[in-house]
Amino acid sequence: MNDCYIDSHTHARDFELMALAGVKDVVLCSFVPVARYAETLIDHFTETDEIHRPRLNDIGLKAHVFVGVHPRCIPKEWRKILPVIEEYLESGKAVGICEVGLEKASDLELKLAKEYDVPVIVHTPMGNCVNIVNKVLSLAEEC
Image 1 (cartoon, helix red, strand yellow):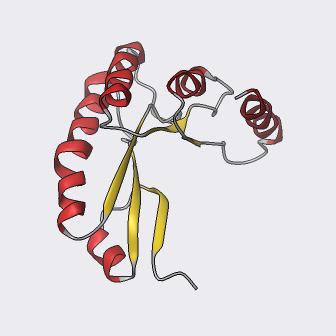
Image 2 (tube, helix red, strand yellow; image 1 turned 90 degrees about the vertical axis):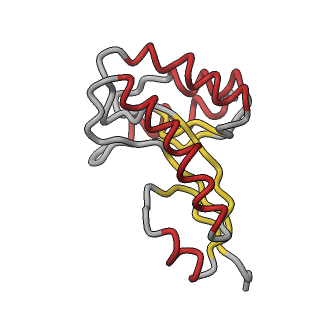
């Protein structure tokens, strides 16, 4: 059995308990369920990088930041966010994209992840999502 655990997809906030339980690495997913404005998500990226990452490091967790536009909370002016995502990837502030917007089978962020050669966390919708899962698998094969 491993002597450590990695949480590969968290929106959690109780990191102290995770560290006590033996978690060593955490992937921080950007997600603001009520984001109506692009600036809200951009502020959240900054908060994740400048506040949560150091806080996790202080308690012994290595934080890996993933940024993106969750398909359930796409702001009207979402295009403003794309250059910010690119800046985070280019600077190393983020190491991946999450959750890739496949709620309605859009593949824009997946294309961005391919361009930057970074991992993604793929979101699939609740309910009968067979067609979208097939699209995800098809797109992944192309990468």
